[in-house]
Image (tube, rainbow over all chains, first blue to last red):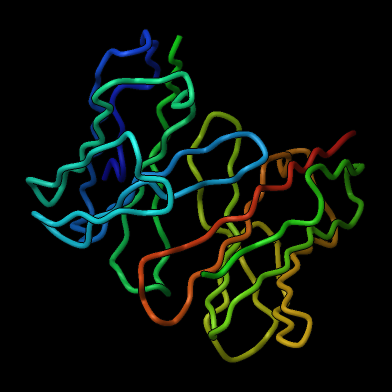
Length: 113
Length: 114
């Protein structure tokens, strides 16, 4: 099992450009999450999904959109990148319920110039 | 919403010494508590979790944590650390209402020196 994978691993964008980050999991998990990690701030939830075709906003959703067309994939989009979106982005998945652990991907390091 | 405070941003320690990483939480309802570890250039992985029952929880790699409800704390301990324990450690909390809102602390960077 590959677990949770993320594509790409690194990306540099110019302000105003758009991009999509792909997350895939092979554990048949219902729940998937997108976080951003910034120095001194831990992980903050951007958006999450509790099943195929569903998405919901997390703590810091502005400037991002998501889609969950297939159970195993969760896409994070930036329509018009800003320097404030420079961060490391992590995808995670879980069986759901607050007592289940989340399984994390290796991260995508995004720089917006 | 619940929140987590990790009291130390960096903890340097010598190899084979004991270590304690401190975590306090705030919530108006009962919570589940987690410790995750992040090795350099990797994602997070679960060390241990407290759901209910015994307040002393044992995890992987010799780590343990103690839930203290009156102090609203969930400190992580290891009696003897190794160089390989050098990593960033995150405390996290989710509440029993199941609103998919796990909150993470800012992290503690543990550096084990020879």
